[in-house]
Structures are given as structure tokens and as C-alpha cells.
Amino acid sequence: MSSEAVGRYMPTVVTLDDLTAMMAADEHHRYEISPEGVLSIMPPPGYTHAIIATRLMVWLAQGGVPAERIAQAVGLRIPGRHGGVGGRIPDLVVWSKAQEDGVWLPVSDVLLVVEIVSPGSEGIDTVTKRGEYATAGIPQYWVVDQDPAQTVTLYHLDGDQYVVRATMPLAWVLNAVPAEYDLG
Image (cartoon, rainbow, N blue to C red; front, side, top):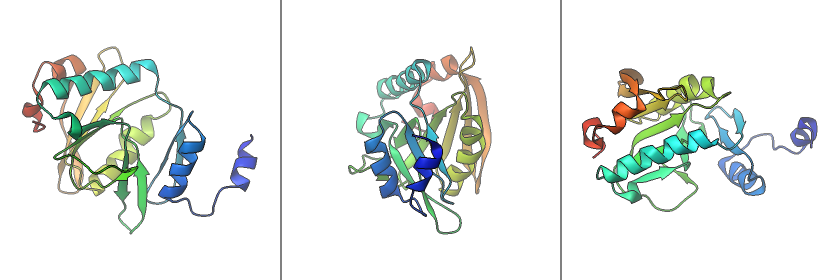
């Protein structure tokens, strides 16, 4: 189907319920929307991307973070500065406590979101989502590049914006314990 045909059937304003229906109808893409209503459509992650997310999940679980507080690719309800609500699907989320089941979960108990940068998602992952997650008050945001070192940039919230806490290879992160990053 052409983009023109898809556009003809799109609602004027896309809601989180619309995104949920779109994802149910199309298993080959991930749909997200900014609090301002900008729709993003991404292909599913590749193998290297999935392995990085899995390594981080295993590290967190082995480091004492309960499994019910860690999830891959779960939807978060992202409040905007001007009253809008968006929906983002971070690659990994860590909460301070277990969550009720749902498609678009609140960010109130989120400790950390991780985005693994894929080709084509650099701007959204490193700029757009960083600003949205900071506005939502998420204490930590990590960005993992798919370079040879799988470089991780660890951001922490300072006021209403993120500042870099550290930048290091993923192997260095995995050699520490999650409690060293306030995740235990």
C-alpha cells in the first residue's frame, strides 16, 4: 500500500488507542507518537540490537533487579509540556516497583529507559526522546550505540534536562553491578 493510500485512512489526530490498533494490525513495525502528535514508524529491531537488550536484561536480573521491574519494548505514556500525551516504546525499561498490566504504562515509577540506536533512529533516540523523557521526569536515560564498543552514554536528570554521567563501552557497564547505577 502506498503512503498516499495509508494517509487517506489515517485519523486527523492519532491517539494511543489508534497506535495500539495499528500495532495489532502490523506486526512488522513499531509505532510511536510524540506528545505533539508526530507519528514515527520503525521496523523491528535487528539481531545485534536484540542481543544488546538481552545482555542488559540478564545483567540487571543477575544483579538483583527483580524480573517484574524490567521489560523490553513496552509502551510508555509520555506527557508533554503543553498537555499532549505521546507513546514511546523504549528498548528497555526499569521500574522502582512492579507495574499493572497495560499497553501504555505511566512513567511515574520508571527509574531508567534505554534506547539502542539503530540506523535511521539516531535523531529520535539521541535528541527527541531525550527531551521527552526529561520532560516526563525519568531519572536516567541510557543510549547504546551499535558501534564496535557498543558505547553507552549514561544520562541523569538534573532539573528538567539530562546531563552526561558517563560514556563507556557496554562491557564496562556489564562489569559493574546495577546498584552502582542506582538500579538495585
